[in-house]
Each structure stands twice: as C-alpha cells, then as structure tokens.
Amino acid sequence: MSLLTRTSGGWFDDERRRALSEFLLPQRCLECGRFGAALHDECIERFPRAERPRCRVCWAPSRILVCERCALDDARDGFTELRTPFRFTGSVRRALLEAKFRGVTSLLPPLAHVAARSTQPSWCVEVVVPVPLAALRRRRRGFNQAELIAKAVGRTAGLMVATDRLARVREAQAQASLGAKERATNLEGVFTARGVAGARVLLVDDVSTTGSTLDEAARALRGAGASAVFALAVARED
Image 1 (cartoon, rainbow, N blue to C red):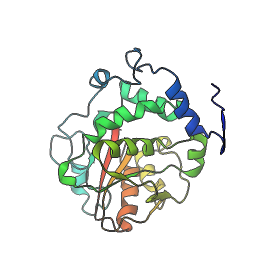
Image 2: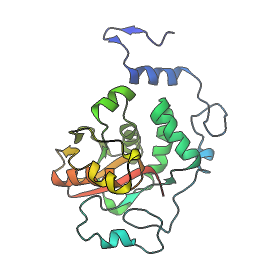
Image 3: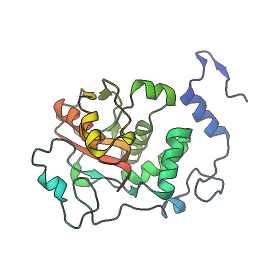
C-alpha cells in the first residue's frame, strides 16, 4: 500500500504518514535489534538512570536535599519540582535524538511510560501540558516530541492532556547553541498561557538541561493563574 494513499480529506499529512508507516512496518528495538517493539521493557531497564541523591527542586546531582543554586533562589517563580527517570546519555540520548530528528516517534511512548512513574503523588496534578515548539519548527518537523510524550504520560497516569494551554509567541535561538546565562535570557517572554486558573499543572518536555525552558514555561502558566506547576522530562543532562 502506498503511504500517499488519498483520502476524502486529501493527502495524509506528515504526522499521519509517519504513524501509518510505523503501523505497517515491523518494529525493531533500537537497543537490542530484536523485532517486536521500538524499545523492549528489559532494554529500557538498562538505560542510565537519574539516581538519587539529587536536588528535590531541579533534580541536579546533589548530596543535600536542595542544591545551593536552588537554595539561594529566594524569588524562584518557575516550576516547584522537576523529575526525570533517565540521564541524557548513552541509549537514552540516542533514542530521543532518533525520535526528534529522524521522526522515529514510536520510541517516545515507552520512555514516557517510565517517566510517568517518576511523578510524585504529593503533586496532585490535574492536567498535563507539553512545552510547545515554535510554529516554524513544528511545521518542519511535523510533530512536537514534548506533545507526544505528554499524551503518553496522560494515558499512563489517567490525566487530561491539554495542548492549547501554553503557546510560544515568538521565536528564540535554539537553546542548545547557547551557554547557561544566555539560555536564561533567551527565553524571556517566549511563552503565553491561558485556561489554567487554579489548576495544578504537570509541564512536560523531552529533555531538561539547565531547566531554563521549563522554568520560563512554568512562569507563563503561573502568570495565567496556575496554582502549582511541576515539571517532568524523560531525561536530564547532568
């Protein structure tokens, strides 16, 4: 069957074509090479974990409950706490980059399933909100990896996923190309939020490096009235 099958609504868009191809073609595990899954559970169990001890707030490696950086940030107005199950290295890094830049999105749900188990019961979150991509980048890529992860987290945790609560209002330089100080100011005013008044929000992204993107998105959500914002990512770059 051609992947360019015509429907009554026209040609399949990029995201639907990708989903169809992943359905039709046999999946082969990125880690072990065996058929049957994009990532086998037993393979994921060997992925590099973001083990404790870590800072309760930013999840950076730390021998104390709250790291010095977070302890000194008296005016902290971003996310309350971050959790990630994996470190952004080795097979985890490879899987996330394959998903993001080569469109192998079938790698994301099994990783998101593990990430969902990292959320804390005390957070009492009510809605899952993905970090949005810039419109141009979304069009070029055909999907938002954070949105796909958020939807899988929502299914696993039984939570509502809202993709229209947070938006980017301007383009910014790619964070990966900047230093830590530049990353913090690069994102100022990038996000706007709505429809979250009084809600306890779980903010989701694929990777956290310095936490600047998650913090700025959380500030927008808080500015729109969210009562609390907690952050979740598949991996953290230590």
